[in-house]
Length: 410
Image 1 (cartoon, one colour):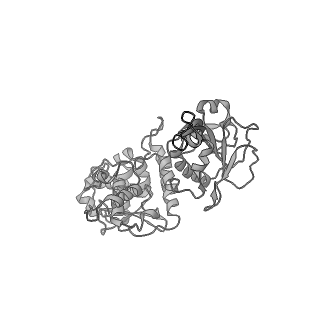
Image 2: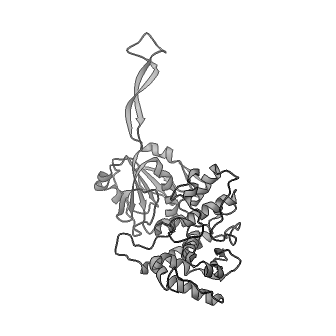
Image 3: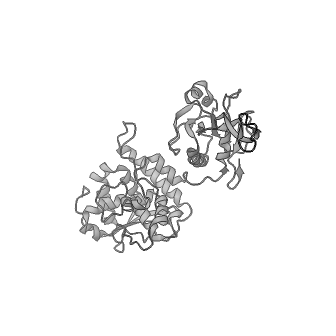
């Protein structure tokens, strides 16, 4: 048993199932083509289960189980690789561990959403797969999250429209609320699997091949499992805060408070004209993130959540900085693997060569404030967003704090 298309023999018990599945996943073409998937599957506990339609995954007491109907794959060997990839997608996309996928208003629509997400990016044969293109008329698109697809179906799909059956079995986890810590268990499993898979991939290029899972880079996937795309725990009114940086020009404003110079005899009929400052366009911002070791992972997660909401409101250049600027470039919509994690120095971001390259209308700096800052204020407005309650000695710039959940900070 060495390749995805080979016909498996029916194993006879738990140890035989482990041996058969392990030989298929790690002994041939599968691991060469899908090293990251093989590493995830190696961390699951296989269970021979003739009650499931083909295969299923389950999270129980902190362990991920893989239920396998062995007879199904004796009769349908061509589907083994595709369904294995499908089960991995259920795990790495958080379908078992995120409570948002459980007990929805419309379970059948959620089942469709999780299936089309689990099937996306799979090129191997699957039995009657549910794919997003079949629901494009309801606003479903490529690359959408499972929850976004569910919302599109909920808003637009007629209640009477029949829904196809999934290619695997969801009964082991359908309707069950994940236990506390399930999200962290999924994240750790994926993180450990990706670390182990690195030894199987070609690391010579700019992006190692074979480390993507469900079409996502490792950093993006771990970010989603960590919940950094969820709502921030601390409130900041970014629309109000960005008024500090909005570019302003003197522009004419029509007003009846001043008579028209051209028609002074027609007050309250022809308005006069005043000149006042007006905001124009999105502000161009340099957003710096303190990536030093003094920043806890939870603080970086909260920063990432705020960046996801700040992104649509401004043109952002993102700087990742510990004791030096480790990365500088356009913000892509999410804070993925941060670079740095050394000492703290808040001065490099304000260096003339950095400000001259970006030419921002202002700077937003997310930091715990534990590092030296420039003695002289830069020539642009600055908002310090502080992640710790300790006093911050910098005498210039506006300040906001990421306080406890529920606190409102302007």
